[in-house]
Length: 219
Image (cartoon, rainbow, N blue to C red; front, side, top):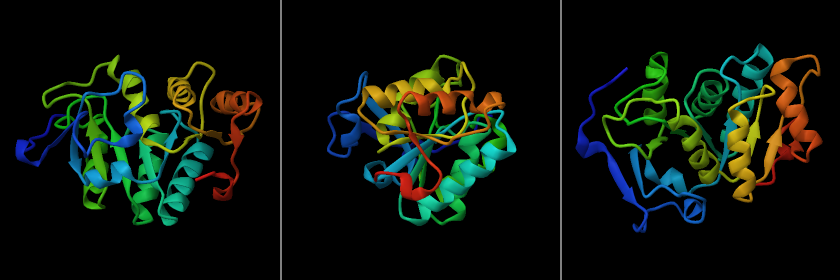
């Protein structure tokens, strides 16, 4: 869904600007320009990225919301991609906790994708959060944009929490970026018979930090 945005409301932050997030300065293929709506100050604050399946289970939805809520209550920002499923629940948890959340888009700021998240888009801005992209106004959502934006999600974070991930999940691209960037990777253990927990359980076996409460985060 395309919406109208006044260009004057869009903050343009170039890689050479003082306002450019320090956490992005040393990542691979750092974005040269960021387009921001809302509170750009949150881009510099402590934050955890929460990512996972679009077609999440009830278990995943509950955990994404509760961890988003609990971390935000502690003053930790929540970063995600405003996709269906885990992303949306994590953003909503942060908003309900009256915390700050950042959505990183794979399109221009004038597109809400998925369109059902229009209310969430507005709530992120109303709650003092930010919506960020490297794509200029008019850029439609495209399949190849979403894996690319994942490096920004992990780059802006101080750690990545994977709530649910299937065996071949796009979420694992975010994990690869996080590891390349030297970020902690956290994972929520899941039922060994659930395909949505295959990826998280494997990550824990490979060295990700298992998380059962917010005291498990090193931030």
